[in-house]
Length: 552
Ligand code: CAO
Image 1 (tube, rainbow, N blue to C red):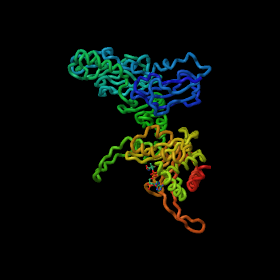
Image 2: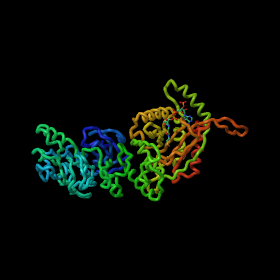
Image 3: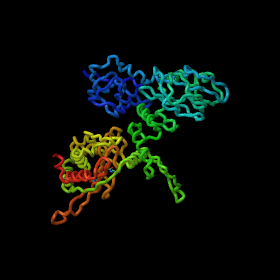
């Protein structure tokens, strides 16, 4: 019989995001295997399976927001399951909860050295209450002796089996000495560093509490302090929203879960230099792999231009030649520049051009649109292209695959999700029409309209843009005769569509005017041979010339 696994106490009363589902239906899992990764504003938590078994249903998807007690998935218990496996509650007890990770009330966390009434005093900052986590490993030390810190700045990141935990400094000051190093194991109350705290006269109560209080505590009344202590207790140890970078990128915030941090450590990657493509810019394992790959390849690649990747190009002062203005790029443009550059550097691109005769299709489209006007549906040329591409991808499954980073294997996807490049004032986004092969033209047209609208209103969710297997970039509404789109890694092909035009076509006896749609298919030449690309565009062109073939 299937048992439901629910969201454990993750230390947040607010809903948290599902950012990874680590299993799929049919998987056989062992007790303690990570099944889902959740993320709140404060922490990333891997939820372990309470017992071994077979996954029979998954009740959440990436992007969902869940709270304690919500159903995550269903597992049919293994007949040989270990009855001694910890219960779900037990299994998650070393996941920090609000209570467990909350810093001690100020008075309880006494500094090792007390303050004096001089201008500066030395405080020892200690590990706050970690609940029953014992011997958490220091995975990042984010500060060094001499650093001037602001209150709440993260000084170190700890990692237990289940979660990464930021340790903020309780008050502003200058680091005198760092006591810990990466790899050390620490528990509640262990010293982390000594801090020179300036501030003139210190009220007696504040003197006792400086290790976890803010600089303003000396002005706080006793009753205020009680209230403040209660609030402090309810806060987890990590009060900033992002985890700091590895030691060699001090000060830069990065956002990654324990498994990714472990991978980065093993590969010697400074996470501060990796761009996250997950929800809330979270760094995924694929990002670490891609970064390493890009670094290896860029060592031999010539500097080809900027766009977010670190290439040794000189900075040029253009103002020496005339008036200039600097425009800071928004996040979307920076991320898409990096993604495009990564694809450009890693994928050997070739573009196959072809034409499709869409005279009959356009006539049919116009006729149908008249009939559908009352229903508020507009069948766009792009909707037909999505349907035709879905059919072509079924016929040529290699175009719907991804190349393993090792270069050893292709991953064939048994689903067809087509991304559509949408131009917005903020930059380019690619929402995805999921299972395009199973949808009618009307459904595709409606969904595309909704997604394009969401894109322009900045309402797309990460889930709307994930899971694409092939992309289409249509510039047909704007103009042009051909272009060379960049493959949207990890996909292996993208179809560029330009503006259709009446062209004279020789029918064997004479030239006849035919509406001709230019197609430009860019593909990853490591995966797709030129001959197959020509077959693909020829097939696509035949489908568009006679859409009845899509039904075959
Ligand atoms: N040839 C001629 N005309 C075309 C056409 C084509 N291939 N495709 C569309 N049109 C015409 C349509 O007929 C329509 O005209 P009417 O309003 O008179 O009917 C007009 O262009 C707008 O078309 P549409 O509403 O069907 O929109 P679309 O499907 O062309 O485009 C979208 C939707 C979201 C793809 C588009 O708005 C967009 O953002 N395009 C830019 C994508 C981009 O920037 N790609 C570059 C990525 S870098 O590789």
